[in-house]
Structure formats: structure tokens, C-alpha cells
Image (cartoon, rainbow, N blue to C red):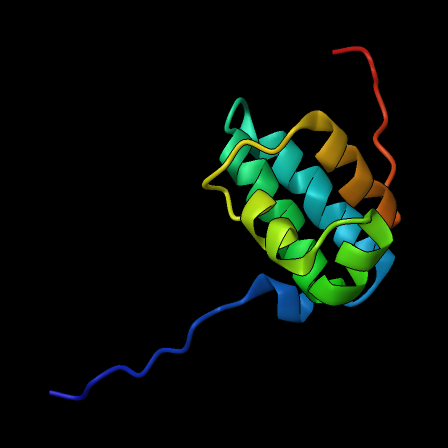
Length: 97
């Protein structure tokens, strides 16, 4: 029997442009429902794609606290989310449901 070789898929490796990053976040927002951890991990994917050190600097956070906030294991404050979104160059939009 042949063994199937697999590799780990990392979405951050495929988020190269601001358009790809915003499309990914839109898809995650549509899919997540009320899953806060799913959304924070999606922001973490985008932050890793842009470079965590630069995003942390732009957000005014330490790199370690940014990793913790976007791990999906914590519930970051809305203020932290807004800082990260600003650092990522992403804007939130509202529309009627």
C-alpha cells in the first residue's frame, strides 16, 4: 500500500494582495456566524501574511500580545480588533441584513 504524503496548508502563504486579504476576511465573516474564535484566527492569518512584527508595530501592540490576541484562544477587546484592522489596512462596512 502506498502512503499518501500531505503537507500542512497555511492560508497566510496565499494572501498576497490587499484584495485577497479582504476577500478572505469577507468569506470568513460570512462563514463564522457567532464564532468569535474563527474570526480572530482569520485576522491572525492575515496578520501573518502581512508580517506579525509590522502589524504589531502599526497596531501599537507587542508582537507577543498580538499573537495571543489573534490565536483564537482568547477574546480580544473590540478596541484591539479595531487597532489590528487599522494596521492591516482593512475597513469594516455595515449593510442591512
